[in-house]
Length: 359
Image 1 (cartoon, one colour):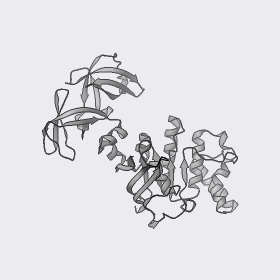
Image 2 (cartoon, helix red, strand yellow):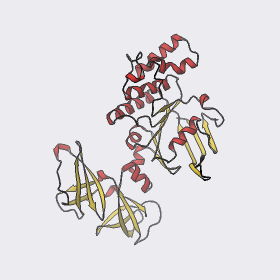
Image 3 (cartoon, helix red, strand yellow):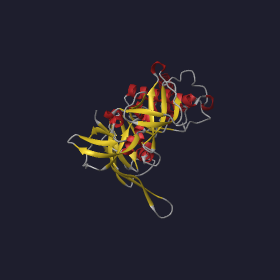
Image 4 (cartoon, helix red, strand yellow):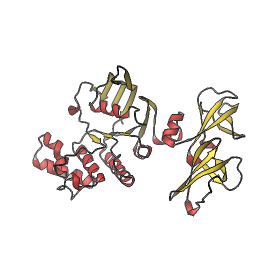
């Protein structure tokens, strides 16, 4: 795949209204391949939506270049960039039928009535809106309205579509259904997609590449598997995997591993990049699904705080080393066990999934 969209040293600065300046996006560079689905993921205020708006032409960067298919588009107005955006709010015309909403952009291009009819019919079929063309947005569910917004974008046959938190207004089940539709259509048409969300499950399930942003900068970039399994910082580990963090002390330093003390036990973990020394305090991170509660002693103990049955999984909150950790266990074959608040439980850590970070 060839490079299609490139951001080169992009910076955006806003005034806070009190004479100070806020750097919303801080010198980021990013390349997106043609046909790739890339997600900008991060907490509120990290700069992801500002980045998307600069690409769309709704905001103008203070420094850097935006390059689309080999051409710098810094001075190209938003309406000439051919980058339709699907918004959280759907942004449909309430007084127009679904057909007219989808056809709106085609009419602006002065296409013939027959061409418009055929194109709308094709995308309606593609996003499962057949039979709803004569209805109005207010007569549709939220998921159907979001599919109309998607249809209105893809009917223009763009090479790239921008998504700004498009599923935030939908309930959990509809979010899953709609994100599946978006990914299916994107793959079917080979459209390049840039998607903004704060929802980790959306990013993991839809993306070819995830770009984690924090404080206006790119914290990590990679495939969903790489980001989830090998977070390069405590911030990424916490944001993408809801990791448990525990304090430890380095006992021994080896070429490829560290021996770290945890609750009076010694464990060997993979050594990350950087220099570590004996006696150094470190932060150990491990995902909730890599910790189990056992009936037999394991060398690690905690006190059960909350036990929650969630259907296919159970979630436990356990007091451990003066803090609380989360444990997620599968309920395969009905193996759910209810523990009493305050009960001492034995913990088994899958040590291969520990990650060590400097404090």
